[in-house]
Image 1 (cartoon, rainbow, N blue to C red):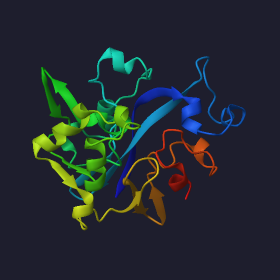
Image 2 (image 1 turned 90 degrees about the vertical axis):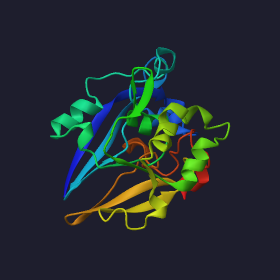
Image 3 (image 1 turned 45 degrees about the horizontal axis):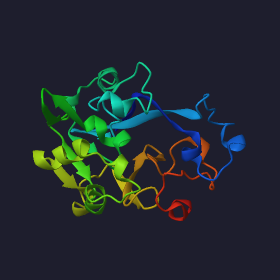
Image 4 (image 1 turned 30 degrees about the horizontal axis):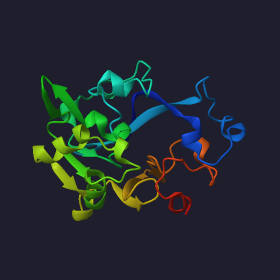
Length: 230
């Protein structure tokens, strides 16, 4: 097995929203904010090479959204999904499995791209993996999370016939176990990967940065912060 970090670029989010009830005087020690109180975040994904399978965990924000949407998030940096895959020795067509921890736009937006006036899957040869309960949560969203679930990112997966649910295929992934977590959103899937003599956990938005390691540092975005804390 080989693991590669896939950097898909950087964006900015409000520091107060990212750290919830924690005062700025504390969280800015690890995540300094700019003059608009925005902090920079890297949208890092993980590539797992194992035998004849090439599994990508999450895929970043993508670039298909219009300027009125993207200008709120200040996308920046030279890294992107295509170039990072190329650096690892692959391209989008090589991915066999697109595993999505959850369907917020900054984790799944790169999985669908615009080709002319159509929305098509970026990874044309891949199975797209979600969780059946989370899919229902995302396609029938609550008012609090609705802005994070974009139909352009989600519905083309189903329409393509390439959508699968990991909870309905217990032996789909021998490469890792899946920890299912509520709190940030409903049924977020966290891969726990046995690698050599270690367990590597892809934390997604259960623990979005090293600045969130102290237990009270829970995002204001989380739907049920006490479950995240637990």
